[in-house]
Amino acid sequence: MWKKVSVFFCLLLIANISGDQEITAPTILYSKKSPFGLIEVVSYPGVSDLNICENKDYSQTHSIIRQDDPTYMGASYVQLSTASFCVVEKLNNVLLLGLGGGEFLSYFVKYFPDANVDIVEINPVMIDIVKNFRKIKTDEKKVNFICADAFKYVDNMQEFYDLIFCDIYFFTPSIASMYLNVFEKAKSKLKEGGAFIFNAVPPEIPRVLMQNLFDKFDNVVALYSESGNIVFVCYQGIVKTKEALQNIAAQLQARYSFRYSLSTITNSIELITPENKNEWLEKFPAL
Image (cartoon, rainbow, N blue to C red; front, side):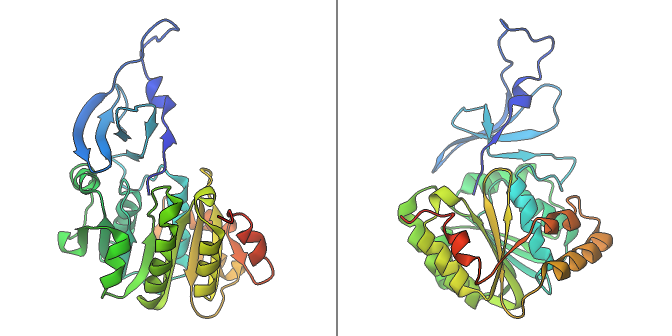
């Protein structure tokens, strides 16, 4: 899912700008019509970041590409999703349901270049942008782009995965029920010791859907993002206490030197328990 991020800093990068001067237009590096609107990659004078924008709205960006730093993730909820590294036993086979601007993909393969990653993305233009503008350094055979509707793809999913990241939503409550199948299939296709990540936007996700998610998995932890998203990390088996997760985070951080500190991220983890589950459900509308 794309989460729009304000890019006012890009619009203010103009030499000696004054109140009556016009804002410098961006340089368009890529422009292509997609099934969901016009998508462009643009740059601004004096800024190395590339912005992915939609339908000529340059005041907002869907994703930022920092080509000299493949570990940069502008979306806070994507940063928080790395808490899942503390839950899984292995990270050999990963499925991304939704590519977005490729932030998680770029970050993940930087630190786990030997892992196999399948990416299911409905928008062919986003796949094209990620392939052309993100400098993903790994064996091409290990990164498999699949242009398909993720909701339909999971119906015929055959592989088993250590980690499944579900980041798909078009802000249409009418399709929310389709997630029920995603949750069921994801659980059935997780390897032992695997984890499922769900990026949720509370105003758009009905309560009944979250009830289903909580019921499907033995354990669920939650992390709030600055953008208002809630990242849920779900896994089976024995519950890991927050202290245990923090200890694992410290070990992994020392080993991999992640750009976004796992120790800091796990500090914000909240465990969903039978005692507080209803409180969490009330955060979502009873549509």
